[in-house]
Length: 203
Image 1 (cartoon, rainbow, N blue to C red):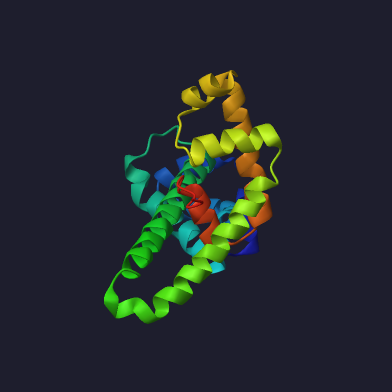
Image 2: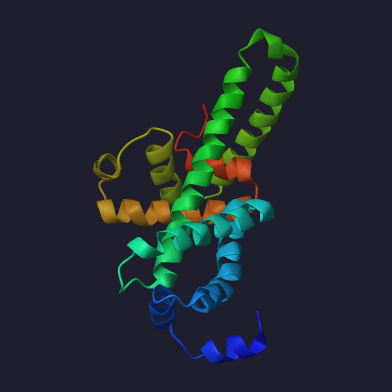
């Protein structure tokens, strides 16, 4: 974008740019895009570990934002809209990854795939073993809460009653466990999808 145009709009807040855009100033939309696109891509990359997917998710958010503009409230804050929309798309991305993983797993039972089945099962088993090892490294109480929630499929209330702690404490342990595990798993999307699925396949 022309530097003069960028400088002209530099002091405008996002809401002010949004108001200009709603009045027909397309350059205002371009400034919003320039301000936030890279940030959205970086966030999406941290959550997916896939550069192409991150850029596609960010582009999709802005495309939706552009199309939805006529229906949006005048007091819409672009930054809030964009980041909430991105959060939803990241969630859908991981859900689709999980569905694909489950689809792949179902294919293993098809006789036509008996040859690659062994390799796929071994690969998944290795991933499960690695994930289980990371879980075992969690602080004791944190690990207990995590396994009761994800492996035993207990609700937060049930975990709290079982361990004689508050629901808030359970939620704190879960947040801590997920934060530690995501940090240790890095950008391994397959492991993150297994982790996000709830069922950890650790039996």
